[in-house]
Image (cartoon, rainbow, N blue to C red; front, top):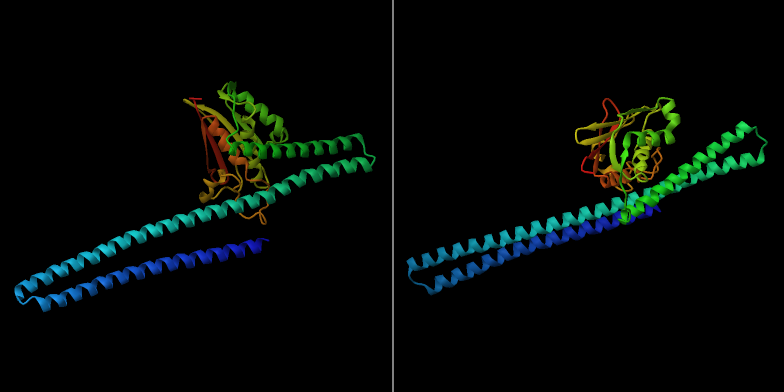
Length: 330
């Protein structure tokens, strides 16, 4: 299927290039013909003048005027032709960029479908396996509780994935309204992190540096998605040893939230694109990390809804820092 689509894209691209090349060649040839026609007309007029005007002085003046008119006409043809050609090339470039954007978006959607299928099947298969094990074997209470805990975690993961997809759909349709209230952000973030990542916090893989009594107006239902998506992203792209730090500080009239990791980092040319819907670097066939390309899109949308900005920068010597700055105007 992919080979067939690639072949169609190559053929359509080749046809478009040939078509545009033909249009440009025809236009240049048309311009050359107009210049030649102008020269021929001037030559014929000059011959008529030489036959009809006997006064050499007058003839010389008439020929000079005719030559000036020839030059002006040629310059007009070349000038208008050049402007038209530049406009044509500009239009071709716009079409090329629009076509590339469309192709990239389709590729991202195809990658999303591949990844979402995998992401949905994995927790379902894991949960099914735990339940089948419980059904077929007589296990100790501790082992049963362990399998049940795994099944619950996978169900929570599946639920979070579905919530992200539904949330992104509502965002794209501008159908998502938030309701903000003044909140102790320090306590709220600590509660969210301990509820979702207690094991990582206890093992010191996730470190918290939360300034106390930082207040800000937030939507308590939507805001956890900002935290969990950034932390999940940091874990996902970490190396074998997870080392993620979260800081919350009040800086003058702003509130600054940082999520820092020591993972594989992000290429400079991708730092703007990673917040686009469905965007994931690389090919889904060779990508080892899990994901749907929705997490950072959701983060940016919700941050902006909370009167904030989100950016990413390098965490020297390795890794990334996602920085969110909330305005006091909230």
